[in-house]
Length: 88
Image (cartoon, rainbow, N blue to C red):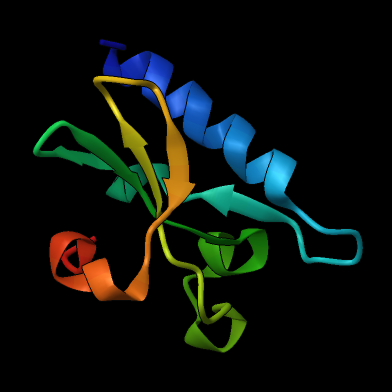
C-alpha cells in the first residue's frame, strides 16, 4: 500500500516518462486529482491549457493517469473506464 503523496509522485514520473519527443509540455491538473476506490485519478493536459483554462489550448485524448494505491502501479485510463473517472 502506498500513500496518496507517493501515488502523486508515481503519477508525475509516469507522465514524464511517457512523453514523446515533440509532444507539448504536459502537467498533471493537481486541483482535480482525487482518490476513488483505492485508485488515485490524475487528470493531465498541456501546460498551456492548465495555465489559461482556455478550451482552445486543451489537448484531446488525455485519459487520466490511474495509480493503484495497493500496488503503486500506474497506467493511463481507458475509454471503457470513463464512468469510473468521468467526474474528474
